Image 1 (cartoon, rainbow, N blue to C red):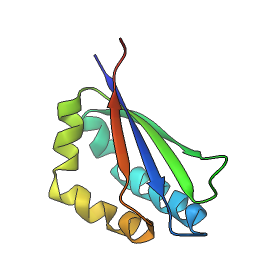
Image 2: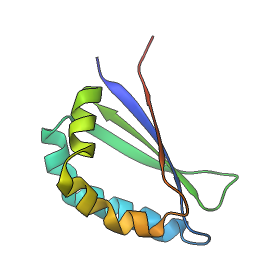
Image 3: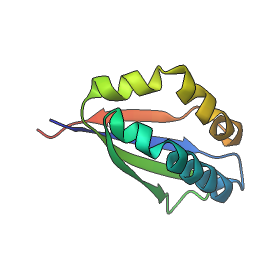
Image 4: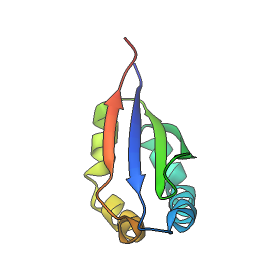
Length: 98
């Protein structure tokens, strides 16, 4: 059974649009590799009442597949430009259907 991951990202003040561009570029570059590693897709959303916040909702084949990608050193390297734009560490919540 697949899982969903809800990722809350808080950009530095006034940098949400820049963060969105960097995230889309990063995922475009990593997309094929992520698919091979178990990512079934993701979408980004602006938080309506917070001009600096974005939410990603991603679907993964399994929690273990996501964990393998998160722990891969190349992921940290690819995420470096994202981390530079964040005001705080991101929060990820894994959910599954009941």
